[in-house]
Structure formats: structure tokens, C-alpha cells
Length: 57
Ligand SMILES: [Zn+2]
Image 1 (tube, rainbow, N blue to C red):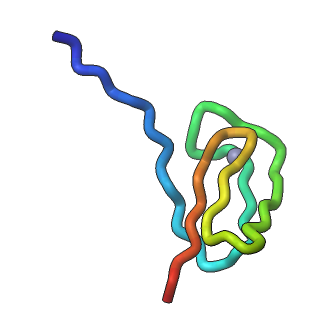
Image 2 (spheres, protein in one colour; image 1 turned 90 degrees about the vertical axis):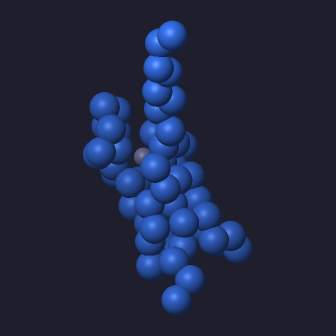
Image 3 (cartoon, rainbow, N blue to C red; image 1 turned 60 degrees about the vertical axis):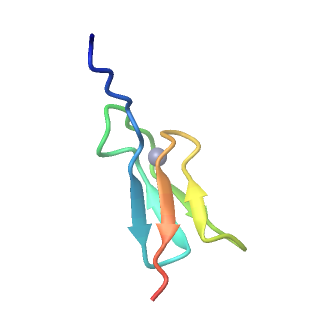
């Protein structure tokens, strides 16, 4: 009967393929890193599993 709330990581929409993440927004913090999406339109932070998605204009 318990309502299970899955901690789903939100996807951050970004305008650049190069994003930075420092873990803010969650309980986990980590040194700021830069992620390059390269050929993809999405990226995921290896530290906090934050997902980033390129905004298609
Ligand atoms: Zn992160």
C-alpha cells in the first residue's frame, strides 16, 4: 500500500553539446566536469547520472 516514489533523474535540456555538471540539484555533489556529447544529442553525467539533452531549435 505504500506509494513508491522512484527517484527518476530529471533530464536537463541544454542548448550546447558541451555541458557542465557539478551534481547540484541532488543530494550528491561532485567536482564540476564537462561533458561533450560528440555525435549524440544526449549525455549522461557519470557521477550523478544526470541526463542532458540537446535542445533542437
Ligand atoms: Zn553530475
